[in-house]
Image (cartoon, rainbow, N blue to C red):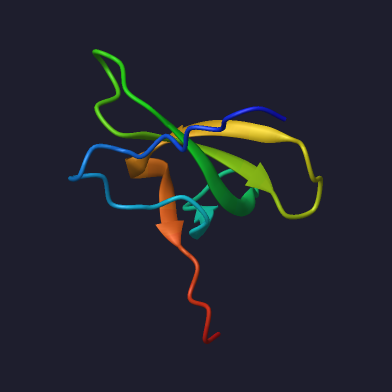
Length: 72
């Protein structure tokens, strides 16, 4: 693989690459932050790769996610 550029989120984003997060409610989804996005309607969004299904990624706005307590 050639040169790889690591994409960092804007400094105000709550989560960082590699943080473990889960969905607050609804269908279950837990995994690691692997990317970021921003749209007119979603000012802070995350791509989360599933811990149970490696390679499967979903995108969620900040309001849908919480940080997983590593000590729990």
